[in-house]
Image 1: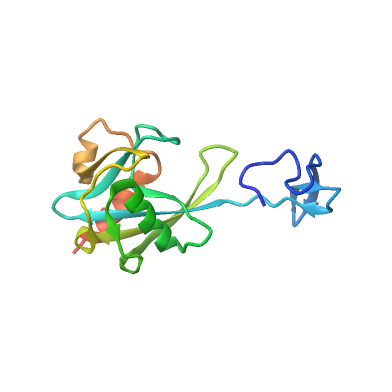
Image 2: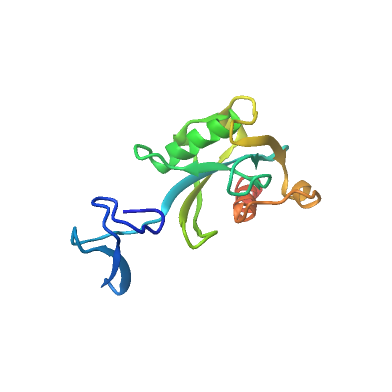
Length: 177
């Protein structure tokens, strides 16, 4: 299984060909007699929302989207559940800690910014009063700020899409009462 389209078999190094399997043309290794399945990458993220201050946003310092604004999130590790990954990414990127059990499922979507890599992102939301720690940027983040949707819209900041949609959903989820 690969994330990116492979040219050679990851097991034996033979150049991959194509074979029609399950209604699709798939990469195939004739030497190993096996299909090289290509699957999306699972990611998880979390929106921390405070009705007074806004949602905790990060300005990215790594690709994709250097300089663009997102909610904390990233790739899941092999030994993590989605809530555990979201909590870990939040702490790594913002120094804010949360118990994964306190996260509420918000959404899931697919992202394909290129033809190469496809992501399935699982989003969570948590009220700020269920978190601990002082927000500060981690190594992949330029800055961390609390912003309401109105403040963001009135600024010249740019989202890494589709984080704008998740930000709006999270804000509504916490402040809709």
